[in-house]
Image: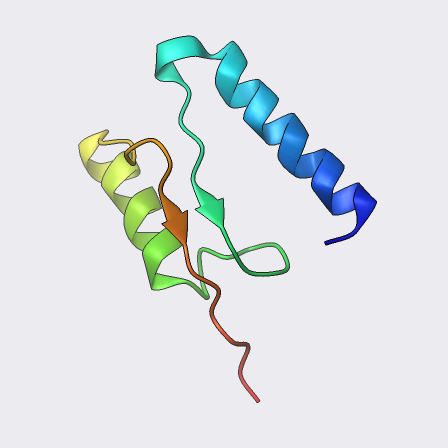
Length: 69
């Protein structure tokens, strides 16, 4: 992880912290952006939030998905 990437992760945790009890951080342990279409774990968490207003539990981490060959 580059220094720039790490700065973004720290910033995202800061935003979640600023939101107090309403802030939840879902971490994708892979690379790149747009993980909704590549990670069933991320897609499921986002769908549950958008459809049922059910945020993921605190500390949830979605494993990396290898990109297609």
